[in-house]
Image (cartoon, rainbow, N blue to C red; front, side, top):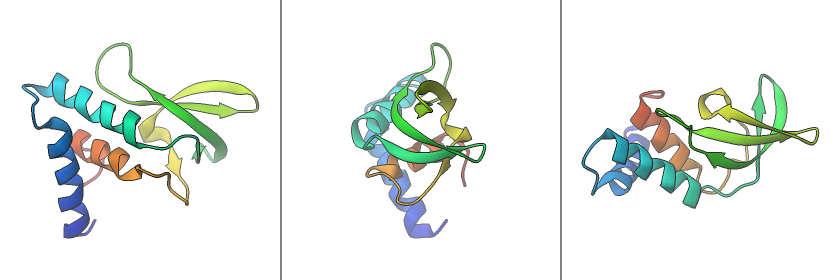
Length: 107
């Protein structure tokens, strides 16, 4: 990741978490920004199979971000880290990257 890209993602993290008091609030702030700013539906892959991401859900407990994926008329919840993003990336994709950076999944 370039310095400029990392700086941009850190700016987004700051924007989403500026008024947060703890990690729970930061997590909520970032998930809200992903939900509000990433245009769905978009294409992605899960274990090599193409799916359509139609939205996002928060896990019932703990931290994480779930993608609501449709394939062959069935809906599946998939952890965001299990998605393989394909071009063209959706509008707002950088919010997903910011979330992944905050969680420590990318460096």
